[in-house]
Image 1 (tube, rainbow, N blue to C red):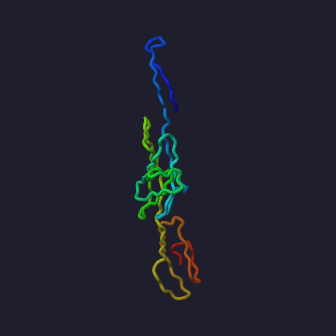
Image 2: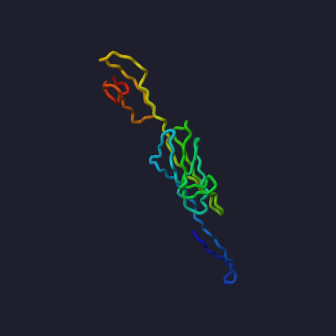
Image 3: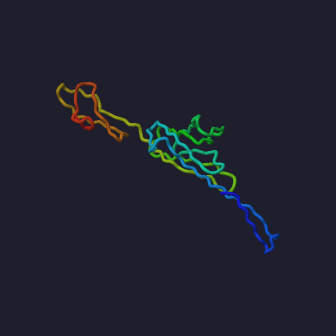
Length: 178
């Protein structure tokens, strides 16, 4: 980057030359970082993202996502202007039904001059809300055992059987315990 002068000579005479000035401007860059690593949230959660930029005329930054959701901008963002896109820090909250991978894009302003705006993407994994089902109400005689058949969804670590009474389980981590 910098300003450079060049001359075009039309002959060997020093009076016969033309000066031109070239300015080399730095290209914009943008990266996205998260306050959560890895960038995994539960359904209904949110994630704070920050855009780290270099170059000139990078603002406004435009935030977008490939899934439905809401971008909000914290009051402590380094750049608070009237336009919703002028924020280096954004909080993204996916819509309630969204699960799976959400691709966030942050794009810089299209500056004047020869350089174009740049963008970068950041993937967020949205896990479904964990649910557990212990089965339906069942009566048994005291001193007998009951085969259980619980189900758990969206809980990679599984679940644990517990009781409000004095009974015990053959295994408190086996969904088909007795």
